[in-house]
Length: 474
Figure (cartoon, rainbow, N blue to C red):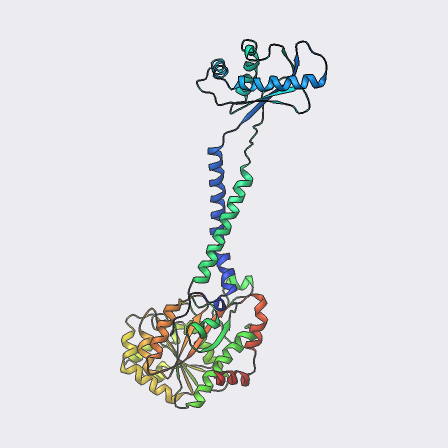
């Protein structure tokens, strides 16, 4: 298989993106909450409130001419000198002494209110009482330090200072904290999207055909097993079977399309009729696909033998709801305790001939390699039109690998967004290196967003003749 680029936009599944975001929404929520709390804590730690007290004085010459213009020009000259006085070391020393402080952290300012002869004194510090007292100290020391000013200046208090009750730089952590939480949440969402996009699982049909360079035998859309809340609680439906009256048409048609392609291959080579269905990992739905394909053949009047060779975790008898007491375990045949006619179970309801396991066994690879298994497949090949073999996952045990050279065709069931590409490639390489023919891959449990559902349903609802035509063109 040729190497492909890490990112192919044609292989991005919007459904997988949405599901990843929904399944990991708790991560986004935690990141947002932690960011909000962290930002709020930092703001509180670094926050130093600043309180400002101010007073307004009318500045006039002692011998006032009552001319507004003259008083304004006089106030401008006085305020300039007053500002210099406030910044002198002697004034700062007086203020520190009165406040009983060793350092001066207050910011003092004086300004002329534009167009008037009004002087505004402001003092800002972290202590509102200190700001208030500083103004009084400045004015109390004015007379003693007045030699620095025009002696003719008179200051009449117009607005007395008051103790500030609210800081000038009111802390508003809500907005900043929420903004930080929003940014962190967006970053978390972007990271989840990147994780989803670059996660090399099989997400789409095009990925099978382009990235894996394998034949897509069929696509099975997601089917809800229990469609009502009552059914979900009671777990009424144990398996998705095309014989069920509540199963959807799209599910039945997708199985029929796979069966048609397998049937067409058999028609080209009538002597080859043993199909092995396997998967990379557990829970990919290979047993469900194998059983439904067998049922589809049986409904067409074909004699089908279904062999459950997944002897470690047998599932077929559970899916058909068969009593365990009626199942003769396949191990008995391999160990020579019974014959094929005793092991084979005919299910009159479905028309299937079944060779099953009823309990888990270890070291089953020995049985798969044995002459008894080869003899079983040889006899079944002659007894039935089609032989379907369900095997354990290839990535877990070597049972399926041991059967590769003993079957005619292999089909790999891949659940959407489940198995990693490199693991699927390893399984495909094993199949392609064997003497069996790799028939193709089945993309199982395929989910799409609603906007694409109509197109998929149309594809899966093709007439059987059309499905054969598609296969021939491939």
